[in-house]
Image (tube, rainbow, N blue to C red; front, side, top):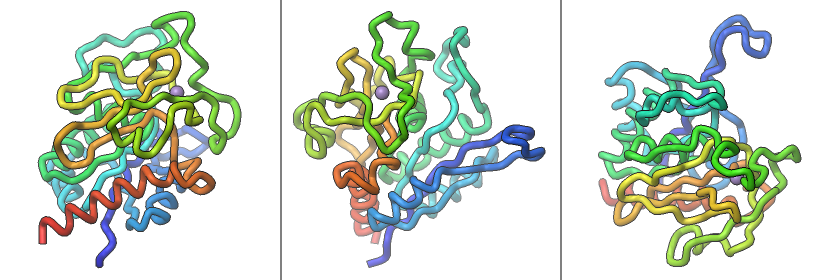
Length: 246
Ligand code: MN
């Protein structure tokens, strides 16, 4: 059987960042290796401002992986920017929002990671906390200083969900974010949380597999089988979708 093609969204590195005078699109190689390990064919997708290219991307892929990156512009979900908002990228927001809609219309599976869970939630009508540290003083440390292969906080999972199938309560995950899902999009449910109540996973109900996690499993997937299982879930759902469309 043909392996499913999994599109991986890319970030935009602005000119003059990192000592380079021109703009670049980039993706962490860990997303690519995780999809390969899960038996999918990774394909990094460049940002585009053209509707027909968004459609072409959605048409050729069998599943979508939304990668991590900069903040989502709050104007997209109807809020003015707060002081602690960091760098945003309007071109990437536009592309990913359009791509998510198109891919979901085609009933292809979607998996969002970090910024990816956030942009997925926004695309489907949810909102974000622009900066979780301004919500309550007792918010945990969600931007760890140890390496990405190491977990730093635990999650608890909702029973009867994909998260429960793959993880148990007290599973240790890594954490590199200052934004998080606030209002959960209609049709989705929060399915994992940290002890401070921050949402660490969402899942869509009664449709093609569509879910996101707030941590970075791609950096843990080489050493921890259950982190790889998230990517396997996406690739398996993409295989199923290919079978159905035959
Ligand atoms: Mn976290």
